[in-house]
Every structure is written in C-alpha cells, then in structure tokens.
Length: 187
Ligand SMILES: *[C@@H]1O[C@H](CO)[C@@H](O)[C@H](O)[C@H]1NC(C)=O
Ligand SMILES: *[C@@H]1O[C@H](CO)[C@@H](O)[C@H](O)[C@H]1NC(C)=O
Ligand SMILES: *[C@@H]1O[C@H](CO)[C@@H](O)[C@H](O)[C@H]1NC(C)=O
Ligand SMILES: *[C@@H]1O[C@H](CO)[C@@H](O)[C@H](O)[C@H]1NC(C)=O
Ligand SMILES: *[C@@H]1O[C@H](CO)[C@@H](O)[C@H](O)[C@H]1NC(C)=O
Image 1 (cartoon, rainbow, N blue to C red):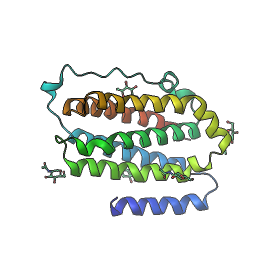
Image 2: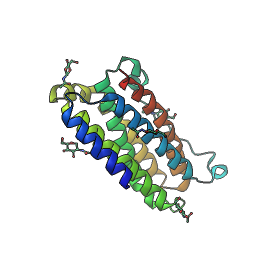
Image 3: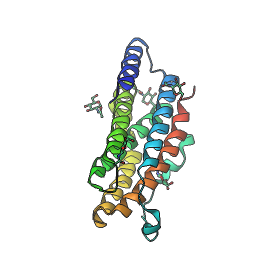
Image 4: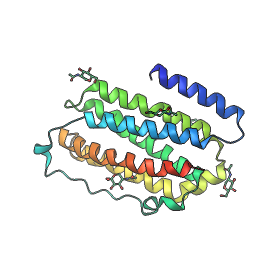
C-alpha cells in the first residue's frame, strides 16, 4: 500500500465517521480512480497472445448482474466489494505465473486492498444483516460461483501462461463493468 493510498484512506475514514451517511460522491471518484489504475496494471501483465489463440474460457456471468440499472447505491457498493474481493483472490495466485512481473502483481493487489477496506468501512459494514442476507441469497452467491469458475479453469489448465492471459483479459473487462456500477453512486 503506498503512502498516497493510506492518506486518502485516512481522510475518507475520518470523513465517513463524522458524516451520517457515506459520501457516495467521494466514494465514486475514489472507486473510479482505483479501477483505472487497476486496468493500467493489468495491461502491463502481458502474455504472448499469438500462442494463446485456442485458449478460451466458458464462464457465465450471473444474469441479474447484467442489469445494474435496477441496483440501489448500497447494493451496487456491495456487489463491487464482492467483485474486488474475488478478483483479489484470483490474482493472489498470479505470483505463480512465471510470465508475469511480480512487482506489477504486487502493485495490483496493493491497489485492490485499500479499496476493498474502504467500501467495507463506508458501506458494507453498515448495510445490516437483513440486507446482506437478501443480497447473499441470490446475486452474491452467483457472483461467487462465477469467480470460482476462474480458479477451476486455471487449475484445469495447470496455471499455464495462456490460461492466465485469458483470465486477465476477462477480469480486465470486469473493471469496465465495475465502473458502470460505480456510476450508481451518483446522487
Ligand atoms: C481521481 O483522479 C483525478 C485525476 O486522475 C484526481 O483529480 C482526483 O482528485 C482523484 N480523486 C480521488 C478521490 O482520489
Ligand atoms: C517489473 O515492473 C517494474 C515496475 O513497473 C519495473 O520497474 C521492472 O523493471 C519490471 N521487471 C521486469 C523484469 O520487467
Ligand atoms: C470487512 O469488515 C468486517 C467487519 O465489519 C471484517 O470482519 C472483514 O474482515 C472486513 N473485510 C475486509 C476485506 O476488510
Ligand atoms: C435495508 O434495505 C431496506 C429496503 O431496501 C432499506 O429501507 C434499509 O434502509 C436498508 N438498511 C440499511 C441499514 O441499509
Ligand atoms: C467480466 O468480463 C467479461 C468479459 O467482458 C464479461 O463477459 C463478464 O460479464 C464480466 N463479468 C462481470 C461480473 O462483470
């Protein structure tokens, strides 16, 4: 975690404990910045595309996730939080890919972590059990199995560089989706 992150986090934590409800506007900017940074790092994790053309992953994105327009702010924040956690867990294994620069994997995880903590402290921790249970009963569980499919795929492909490349590409585009969800924070 770099110093700038820690400072921003501290400022935001300070802010959120004094405000009655989290500042979604600030959270939106912060989340948007974080996604852009993560995408930049993912772009630097290059494989050798020409060798990987036959590798494909047959993953199914949860149906309800495709229609974020029906999400409330809190729900969107919860979904983003879960996605970041799952993406984090997938890339934790990224160190094992010899084709990837470990510094960049480390930077990526260091970018994801404070953002997860931030969402957790500003929104998720305040959602209440009832709302969490409701979200878990459908969306979140489907989301989790969607991300389990990445780990299953990597295992089946014995964590080959090509498999990592496929996973990277897929997760890269997930950040665009996260940005769409982030837009829900707009008041
Ligand atoms: C997000 O990044 C922009 C420029 O890239 C910067 O002006 C802005 O202050 C950042 N916002 C937050 C909340 O970090
Ligand atoms: C890995 O990435 C870091 C940060 O971008 C860079 O300084 C370093 O030279 C890279 N290492 C290799 C072996 O490419
Ligand atoms: C989120 O907050 C809960 C308690 O509110 C804590 O148990 C959990 O470890 C936190 N998760 C992260 C990723 O910060
Ligand atoms: C839980 O959800 C209900 C209905 O969507 C909402 O009115 C309530 O404010 C939520 N509770 C919290 C703590 O977010
Ligand atoms: C992740 O990205 C892929 C590729 O664009 C897309 O098909 C999938 O729907 C995304 N999943 C989520 C949860 O955003």
